Length: 417
Image (cartoon, rainbow, N blue to C red; front, side, top):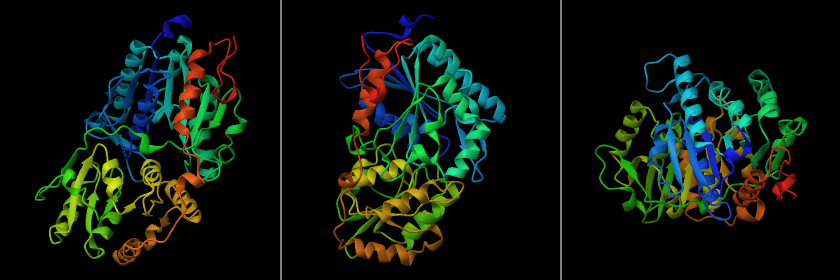
């Protein structure tokens, strides 16, 4: 199909996130989409998400979404269908066909793939060559840290990611700052041929457009999210919640500073038995509130006096962007990503970090007591680059303006005549 088929007055951009664990991928893509619909691009944006909760996220005019039937990632890193009684291969085929049909009809000029070049379980293998043949520009967006370099090298070799990138992709955008982690050097991205690699800086979550804050209280709990915005309170959050019970339970058993309340945001993917266990603890502590899900947690974070969280990319960027006094308790399996991020941020003095092996109600309570009278600490914006959204808009414009015979120049500058 000729290039003109994907060149329009109003550009079309599609963003894919596989979303097999947690809510971070769709939240990151939603933030990017809100940037891309604004001038100077003013694009129409289609989100392709692998998690049903994506339908609850507030989306402004110019953005819409398609939700795929979901995978669920197991503690050992394997996958299974989250809800449907299909075989794993049947679900892979269903998702791949759905993505291909949607993107063939939408015909984006730019396709941004989040984190996994070939998609979850290689479900983009039938999609990428079709888009490439149509003239669609294709970008991989990477968070700052994936895992330790040796683990990533083995994983990428097994998944043949380098060849996929060189065959189908125009660029890699790294949502990070080399002062925290040199993603390019750690993962050998400088050895890729024909792929422009650009660290763009961190994505400023404080700029995310906040729609109506929605939340769900657990059974037996009165009140709503809106009622919790009266400080002082400590907020405990753990992303999707699949493996967050230990952090939430330590918080639920920890003593709070005098006059403080505590809010636990479990995440919609916390197993029912784990949520019931937390509910039993909270039932005996009227100063605690248990919430299962919020499609937009920024308001909760913004008003919190202190935050206890796991160290996923998006949760961490939110607390840094909002300059919250934070204790990070990262997961260390099946990836060390969160531990690497939390440890380096702690070394910079931007957060406090507690290894999960050292987690206890006493340690959390002691940290909260100190948080009631916090010591001065560096501002994240004075240490790290949070200009990623602006650079993404510039790079996207450069790619959309470039033709297959006139690729976008480095750093997203407009192409020549």
